[in-house]
Length: 443
Ligand code: 4AD
Ligand code: MG
Image (cartoon, rainbow, N blue to C red; front, side):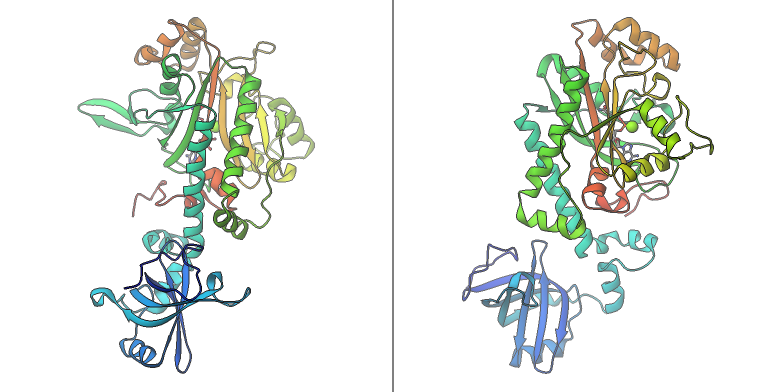
């Protein structure tokens, strides 16, 4: 019995070996006496050739796409440029449909699903099938590689991984986007960010990070907002704002380096995003105040259609236009106190603004938000008051400022937004397994 191999090059490219493969019919082409079946197993594709009696019996049972098959045969290496995945093919001498499980007909429907053709809502209803498509699965392969690379880079930078709770009773990024639920008769929320919990780990564990889900009840439908997303967050102790920016740049570039060092993943990225280039360091730095001037000079209005003035939120559309024109990563820094979260440290030179940073990427806009944290107890209490937040439920957070406070900061990166940029996807919905957003909680 020949060994079972996965369809992944180079594990099985040896010319002349007999192998057994399992996969699903991805596509097929029939000629008079020859049938070309491309099998897919999640690792790769293999063109299998059925001739003679095998072709006859294949035709007799009229196999449909997506049917699972076992095929045994001999591997043939083909010359470069041949019309077969990875320039190889399997000359079959045996095939079997396990337990006779034929996928139902409707060839066109399933082909359209897998090739992601049709109206977006239907495709999302059929996400369990569209995931089988070449583009959808390529994005998931890149996602797997990128997530793993983040873990590796945090190991290299001596950040420890922790796993904060998802069920909480405090907010981080404003009450408007909280998902509330009944927790044994008490009000609780799904976490918006693990930041506050990461901060509490610094005295015991040093620099820490987590890759967890965050939840936001976003009441508008955009191409970069999800209700549930994967949040890469880190918190660093005894640092300056400059240290924070340098660290962030280093982590992002190193993640890209590791990801691109895998030739299979690099090929997926090149296919999805042919113009991809490693960003050059240092990233462009731009203060919020300069961005306001820049937006005015370029006649890009604010949300009311007026020229931007200091204190305005830079909305998604304006932010994206700016990033697309500048066309490289930007660290946008020093946002005004009023438009940022309560916990952000004020700039020593200019108390109107915070030591805050958003990292903006072409095509997506903001993919990271970070800041230095307010480390003075009284100042933090004043910030709660200013925002109208009752500090009592935050005692475990404010205690940090009593028992050995320190200059520290951190950030959160939206994994789906990072992938939308890297894989040049129109929407973050295509960068996660089963997207959740207002109006969709299925499949
Ligand atoms: O800018 P945000 O709200 O910052 C925080 O949550 C900080 N507490 C993080 C920290 O400092 N530890 O969110 C951080 C990032 C955003 O830049 C964005 O990439 C992503 O999280 N994000 C979302 N991604 C998808 N859907 C949403 N609804 C998102 N909201 C934020
Ligand atoms: Mg933000």
